Length: 538
Image (cartoon, rainbow, N blue to C red; front, side):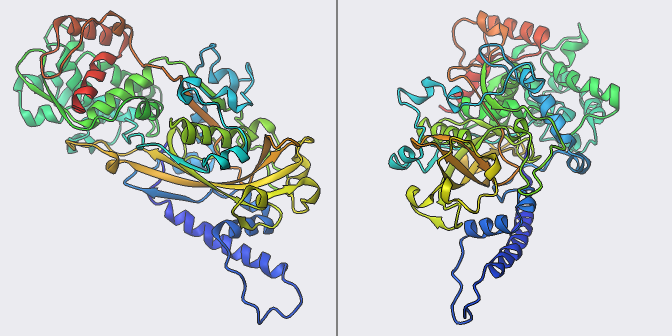
């Protein structure tokens, strides 16, 4: 779900090992002529990686691709034990709850009831391309200047709002709350020691300010009474705590990785960034409520996590933690576990980011650090897969199959492949951050991670991309995004009429609908969230 802030250390280790193997490969291939007087050419990092792959492909295929982090990202979520025994792969698969417009869900693909999509065209939404046709060929991509691309602004960073902290019930600005060790301690802090009703009755600005996003929402939509316990602790907030109660009662633990990253990842680009805090009035008219950008982001992430919005996705079939490898190349043998092929990946990235200027969510099942992250930018370069040299043009990077003597993946090539092109791509995606009481938000507060993927693409006789091979088993294999006009909304949103300006009290009818919706379905109103976002950007 998140990228470790110390990812520079693995990168150093990666290159240390890489340089050693690259040196060995260079020595092994040196000619017997007098080379002592000839200076060795300076190799690019790409060329060093290629030499490392040639020297020991099995070892290279198991390494984590190089990563770089910018900004203050959240800490890694899966436990060391989950990582060692690959349990995180099962947990990722179990957490995917996505369905497309035709009713096929990720679970259907994972359980073999439906086939994984194999064509990049299945991923594209014509409404995002604004009348443009997808660019499917490498030559056309180069001609149209699509070898790099980025969005106008990064999708916004935010918390994944962990369940063990009560999701949006988390009082993230309260040090005593954040110091609690587990779900039960967090719950007892808000339900026994410092209840929502007691804080609302006291009206202390400091205590009101430190409430969780769902608690502020509850004070916005209704008065708290002694009539029913659910009202004393809010309307929406109780459903936050209930999502962790079952895990705690069954296991005595709510794992730290569990949260709503799937909601944040799409809300971050489907909804505008809340740029400043918004003040409004509580339902009883007694208190001023301040929704910080983090509070608004949390509400937006939650409704996108809870609402069923049709999605398009590609990949996601393999659940085998011990997939067999080819002993010569290190490549995964099970085609289901090979998953999204490089051609599909390349076409989706270039068209979504470079052409449509629209993000999407990537996940790498084999990588515990990449899970439900919105993509921001890409840039790729060519290498010649026969010589390993980094080159400037597509023509220089293209090798006819008949002349490809260094092909480690020869037995896996398509019979229709006539040539192969080497590509290395840098991809930057947005990662989670900690929520804060900052009054303003901008791209400067976002955290990103960049990863480098090395692969080749097979071309048929007409130059069309028909497949390819990854040079790492840790690659992006599951991609998804909501449909272009998707809106995350609750059942109550269909009943709303008129508009709401947060500088004014919430209309009584909106309050009634919001309370009923929260109590019955555990969801906030999209209308309220969207009004807060609009007000934050005035």
